[in-house]
Amino acid sequence: MNKQEILDKQKKYLWPNHLLYYTEPLPLDRGDGMYVWDVEGNKYLDFFGGILTTSVGHNHPKVTKRVQEQSAKLVHSSTLYPQENHVNLAEKIAEITPGDLQTSYFTASGTAADETAVLLAKVYTGQQEIIALRHGYSGRSSLGMSLTGQAGWRIGGTHIMGIKHAINPYCYRCPFKMSYPSCGIACAEDVEEVIKTTTSGRIAAFLAEPIQGVGGFVTPPPEYFKIVVDIIRHYGGLFICDEVQTGFGRTGDKWFGIEHWDVQPDIMTMAKGIANGFPLANTITTPEIAESTVGKGLTISTFGGNPISTAAALGTIEAMQENAPPSHVSDVGGYFRTRLEGLQEKYPLIGDVRGKGLMQGIEMVTDQKSKEPATDAVGAIFEQTRQRGLLIGKGGLYNNVLRIAPPLVATKAHVDEALEILDHAFASVQEMV
Ligand SMILES: Cc1ncc(COP(=O)(O)O)c(C=O)c1O
Image 1 (cartoon, protein in one colour):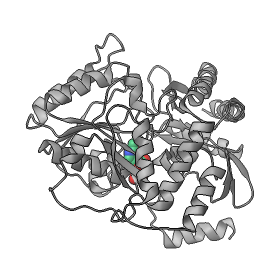
Image 2 (image 1 turned 60 degrees about the vertical axis):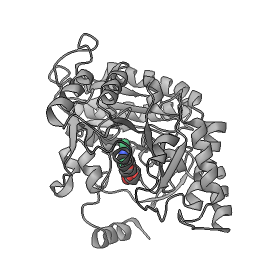
Image 3 (image 1 turned 180 degrees about the horizontal axis):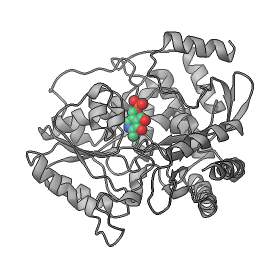
């Protein structure tokens, strides 16, 4: 099919609220490693990785081989029957997650993983109230949208009761108008005030992403999680760490983002990068917390632990360990960060560069002093980078943050290629504003 035929059918047969990137949407045809091609044969360097999902690059041979072999053997089983890939993957993940996180429940999306985590925390603690963070994102179900801390992502005004949103550690736009470190991490300390004033004083959990993904790669200061998690535990709650974007080496140096903050989650959720694009998610916890679900009611997941998705995940983790371990991500990510900071020195449009590893955000502002969000300029950068053959993402409450997160197999040469395009794009957009 040609481009127009695809776009016409998209318009006729898919809900009009599908969010599509670019003024003229971009139908993709195929991928190979760090690159994708559109249906007209144009090639793009993919620095968004299908929303931080194609961890080891498009069509990685190891993943493809495992998937092909498994699809010729058994495509589906459901969680009603034990299956080899399912248990092997659970074992593999238990080996790389921190602390005593050992027992998994696989589902098919990040939304379902977060739902499962909240359910588990409620069952274990016997409490109902949840603390989430402003600007956070947790998915598209009613609960997911309610946990999410952005009005724009709550379609239809859906809101489930019993969720309170604490102030997020957004140092660049500190809601208290303070500066780090003299602020004393006021946003973290304020969580106690939130519990005391807006809840019954007993909570089931605090759910947060180590680095807020959709929120625009907001990266908390080093002290943040320790302070908050101590408060949460004091009030009887569990810490649910949403690693849907930050998991599997994305932040460099460690397998999971939260390990940079040196706190131990009670429950961790993961999806996106787990299976290089195959639908799979996981909620992992300690044996003691998992045990609390026994005898409390029935639950199944038809697609949870699907044999093909788990085969893909086993291939993905193996490929990461061989070609793109966390040490590689921190090496290339460090180089990437330095190059982005170089861009920041050149272009006043860049207010902030933040993130970790191969998860780097550029917050764009019209004026460095007022920090007015440069949302239109982000749109212009988007069109320019597309024209020059580079795919990137965007986000943030004000939709003014470029989210740049290539597959973890990216090399410094790929970073150079991306930076050259970004440099040209910024030069032309900076001239226009
Ligand atoms: C941090 C986080 N949690 C949960 C989700 C929901 O995942 P999914 O879209 O797979 O349901 C997302 C999706 O972007 C996410 O970024």
